[in-house]
Image 1: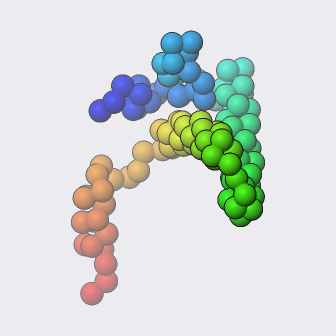
Image 2: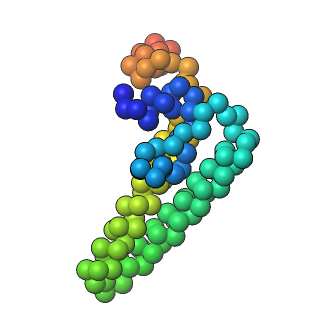
Length: 118
Protein backbone atom coordinates (compact mmCIF):
# COMPACT_ATOMS: atom_id res chain seq x y z
CA UNK A 1 0.00 0.00 0.00
CA UNK A 2 1.38 3.41 -0.91
CA UNK A 3 1.96 6.05 1.73
CA UNK A 4 -0.77 8.45 0.45
CA UNK A 5 -3.36 5.68 0.41
CA UNK A 6 -2.34 4.50 3.91
CA UNK A 7 -2.67 8.03 5.31
CA UNK A 8 -6.02 8.57 3.67
CA UNK A 9 -7.30 5.32 5.12
CA UNK A 10 -6.32 6.59 8.56
CA UNK A 11 -8.74 9.49 8.25
CA UNK A 12 -6.67 12.24 6.66
CA UNK A 13 -7.78 14.33 3.72
CA UNK A 14 -5.39 14.63 0.81
CA UNK A 15 -5.21 18.34 0.06
CA UNK A 16 -5.18 19.65 -3.52
CA UNK A 17 -1.65 21.05 -3.22
CA UNK A 18 1.81 19.75 -2.42
CA UNK A 19 4.53 20.91 -0.06
CA UNK A 20 7.47 22.93 -1.37
CA UNK A 21 9.35 19.62 -1.63
CA UNK A 22 6.57 18.16 -3.78
CA UNK A 23 5.24 15.88 -1.04
CA UNK A 24 1.49 15.40 -0.53
CA UNK A 25 -0.21 17.47 2.16
CA UNK A 26 -2.89 16.08 4.44
CA UNK A 27 -5.48 17.55 6.75
CA UNK A 28 -6.01 15.31 9.75
CA UNK A 29 -8.99 15.10 12.10
CA UNK A 30 -11.30 17.46 10.27
CA UNK A 31 -15.08 17.52 10.07
CA UNK A 32 -14.85 19.29 6.70
CA UNK A 33 -16.13 22.67 7.89
CA UNK A 34 -12.91 24.37 8.94
CA UNK A 35 -10.95 27.06 7.13
CA UNK A 36 -8.43 24.71 5.50
CA UNK A 37 -11.20 22.34 4.37
CA UNK A 38 -13.14 25.20 2.79
CA UNK A 39 -9.98 26.50 1.11
CA UNK A 40 -9.24 23.00 -0.21
CA UNK A 41 -12.79 22.76 -1.56
CA UNK A 42 -12.33 26.07 -3.41
CA UNK A 43 -8.96 25.00 -4.84
CA UNK A 44 -10.43 21.67 -5.98
CA UNK A 45 -13.31 23.49 -7.69
CA UNK A 46 -10.85 25.80 -9.46
CA UNK A 47 -8.73 22.84 -10.56
CA UNK A 48 -11.78 21.10 -12.00
CA UNK A 49 -12.82 24.31 -13.80
CA UNK A 50 -9.33 24.63 -15.31
CA UNK A 51 -9.55 21.01 -16.49
CA UNK A 52 -12.88 21.70 -18.20
CA UNK A 53 -11.41 24.76 -19.94
CA UNK A 54 -8.37 22.78 -21.09
CA UNK A 55 -10.57 20.04 -22.51
CA UNK A 56 -12.41 22.64 -24.60
CA UNK A 57 -9.13 24.21 -25.69
CA UNK A 58 -7.77 20.80 -26.69
CA UNK A 59 -10.87 20.09 -28.74
CA UNK A 60 -10.50 23.38 -30.60
CA UNK A 61 -6.78 22.92 -31.24
CA UNK A 62 -7.22 19.36 -32.45
CA UNK A 63 -10.25 20.19 -34.59
CA UNK A 64 -8.39 23.04 -36.38
CA UNK A 65 -5.54 20.72 -37.43
CA UNK A 66 -3.25 23.74 -37.87
CA UNK A 67 -1.21 23.36 -34.70
CA UNK A 68 2.52 23.70 -34.42
CA UNK A 69 4.68 21.23 -32.51
CA UNK A 70 5.16 23.91 -29.85
CA UNK A 71 1.40 24.33 -29.41
CA UNK A 72 0.91 20.59 -29.04
CA UNK A 73 3.80 20.43 -26.55
CA UNK A 74 2.27 23.23 -24.45
CA UNK A 75 -1.18 21.68 -24.62
CA UNK A 76 0.16 18.27 -23.59
CA UNK A 77 2.06 19.85 -20.70
CA UNK A 78 -1.00 21.78 -19.50
CA UNK A 79 -3.26 18.72 -19.84
CA UNK A 80 -0.78 16.58 -17.90
CA UNK A 81 -0.61 19.10 -15.04
CA UNK A 82 -4.40 19.37 -14.98
CA UNK A 83 -4.89 15.61 -15.09
CA UNK A 84 -2.51 15.29 -12.13
CA UNK A 85 -4.66 17.77 -10.17
CA UNK A 86 -7.92 16.08 -11.15
CA UNK A 87 -6.54 12.68 -10.12
CA UNK A 88 -5.56 14.11 -6.73
CA UNK A 89 -9.10 15.46 -6.30
CA UNK A 90 -10.56 12.08 -7.22
CA UNK A 91 -8.29 10.19 -4.81
CA UNK A 92 -9.06 12.65 -2.01
CA UNK A 93 -12.81 12.54 -2.53
CA UNK A 94 -12.87 8.79 -3.03
CA UNK A 95 -11.00 8.24 0.22
CA UNK A 96 -13.64 10.26 2.08
CA UNK A 97 -16.55 8.16 0.81
CA UNK A 98 -18.11 5.82 3.34
CA UNK A 99 -16.73 2.30 3.29
CA UNK A 100 -18.84 -0.15 1.31
CA UNK A 101 -20.89 -2.72 3.19
CA UNK A 102 -18.69 -5.54 1.91
CA UNK A 103 -15.02 -6.23 2.64
CA UNK A 104 -13.75 -7.07 -0.84
CA UNK A 105 -14.94 -7.13 -4.44
CA UNK A 106 -14.82 -10.95 -4.37
CA UNK A 107 -17.14 -11.08 -1.37
CA UNK A 108 -19.52 -8.57 -2.96
CA UNK A 109 -19.67 -10.67 -6.10
CA UNK A 110 -20.37 -13.85 -4.16
CA UNK A 111 -23.05 -12.11 -2.08
CA UNK A 112 -24.67 -10.75 -5.22
CA UNK A 113 -24.61 -14.18 -6.87
CA UNK A 114 -26.12 -15.82 -3.78
CA UNK A 115 -29.05 -13.41 -3.72
CA UNK A 116 -29.75 -13.65 -7.43
CA UNK A 117 -33.17 -15.18 -8.14
CA UNK A 118 -33.11 -18.56 -9.86
